[in-house]
Image (cartoon, rainbow, N blue to C red; front, side, top):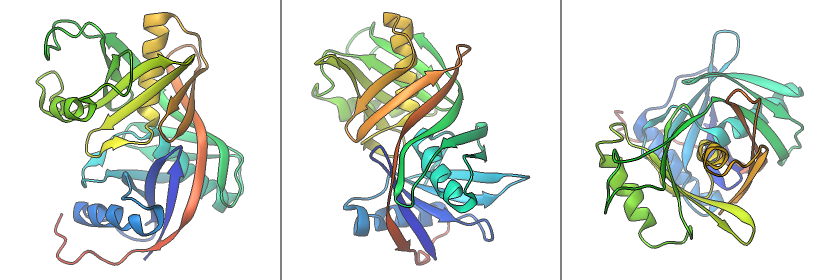
Length: 268
């Protein structure tokens, strides 16, 4: 079974075209994400599965632990590159767990300098006494980008304990379904973001996390869109139509093809 290895600003994905087949099991998703290390030097953050939809392509996203992701901005952009390469068009439509989403842009065989993906409506709110860790977290914000986020405004994204906090918040009563955790700071004149994704761990980039962070900056600091964020794997730009509908823009890189063998004994 042939698949592609693609990167969206550092977010590493295995992309499987299953439009004429069946969806993989969670065990296969986990195993195939591990296989990405053969080309990418590390395991993938997730598995992107293209399925036949009702009039458009359905995109199913697995996290590296085999759980399903309701939304994935960089995954959308990577899947968009694959479909635009096939159709030769300038935009492509996907059915996702969060609704219909469009990806737009110009591509090359090896990727794209800039592809834009719709993310839907983004909502953020400041968290008060509802979130108490070592004490009340006055710098914490809740974000909804079709998936849950908790963004902390901090002085330094390299602050110690980030991964431990990200892991601990997966069990916090304020986030019954887990949460993507971001540290957001202004350093050397640029806004920088670090993200711990539920079902994955710390990642090089996160498209929905960047959107949540950008809307926090608009609310907390009155920063105007478009907003550019620097993540460990690359830069992402967030734009909006002024009514909350967001778009994430950034690069896509094609790293090569993978041959996927069925995972022995996978039962889901």
